[in-house]
Length: 132
Length: 265
Length: 121
Image (cartoon, rainbow over all chains, first blue to last red; front, side, top):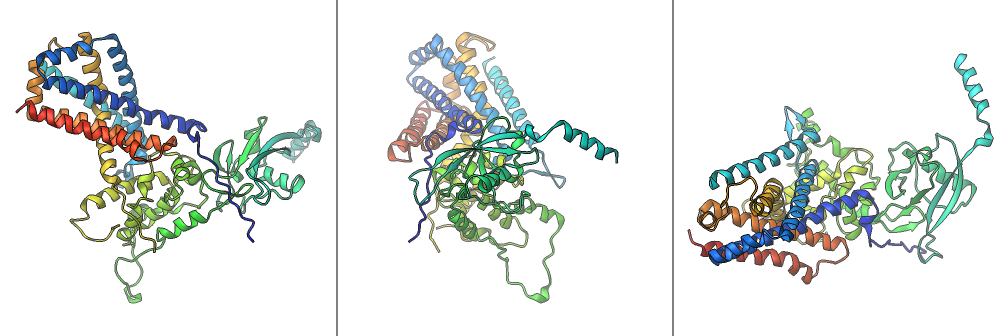
């Protein structure tokens, strides 16, 4: 009879065992903040659909200290999402070949970050133009 | 002659009594008698040129002949001596005791695999995965000897060469939590090898291999942790092979009705 | 040979990717505008998000599309990540986990679509 009895180690708490995994869980958890912000906007949209008084109520609620603090937390978390999203591009995207050479990972990541900054500034500019 | 004299004087300054000793904590498991693995600590005398593998060999030769582990080439090419060293998947032959001294080091069988005995893991699942990816060139069309050899340009060669460097050490599996959470996941190294054939200009098997890539055991088990590519001793970047094939599988998923050329059902 | 079941993940993975990209490009600035700058009266002109302005934006074809894309894709992005994270911390792919993640995203998508259609064009 076989004496084989392979032992399977439990996976519980695997992500605490290595700083690399901890960082992974941190950037994955930015999703909670993305969800919370999306739900905030969804509530705003529903209030907009209900008319002027409801919309102004939502705008007022957004001024509460609790809301400001929450949005500062969303800002940090979603900015970290953007930072890590492009940082992972060399892993998640097909290699880009320029003149027969694979683009360096730093160039790919740097281009992503630059695009994010330009997109953010463009958005601010467009909002400004519409508002003015 | 001068260097020889110098070396002798240096030797004189460091007599054998200054022998350094490192503590190595090994996760032991005897399937015949143990219910679960347990740690044992060994005090191992070492010199600066000794690898962790040599430390483990010292334990086997001097303290406990039953300590079981795999090794062969001692030069980071056979891929058999992978271990968790202080919790990180590494080839023990190219990790040096001096880099851990004076701290104790822990040595454990590669994570995410069942432990067969001590530092030896059960690789049968991995071997099945390697077989499943059809790791050979599947010609686009039958070719006769008269047609001669395949011509491949350096550019075509560069498409897949990186993925041929895999030595099947399985450090990437030990680095991948998704493999641990779902042992059926095809995993990084097998996907790197699959990608190696898909990217080969002589190969036409991409559609045949898609069934596995796009399946529930396929690439979408990956959540882009990326640690597989980080620990790879041969810079294969298996994580990129997995993730590029998510894009390929998504194209196949949405476009399969336009071009009925195979893929999973 | 073993027959394998095709994964439906490309749909959810695709939505995850699209939402992640949108959030990475515009997320931080959107949060800053709607959650910090407007409430505190910083930087942008007063009345930037007044009722007439926002209603006009939601009635505009491009504005509608932008609002819908941001709300729904952010939700699908977050749902997919949270669903995976639940699996990773040991809460495995049950109906409850799906309801809590993809279910919420679906409801949010439907609600935002209905509101955006009802505010008119």
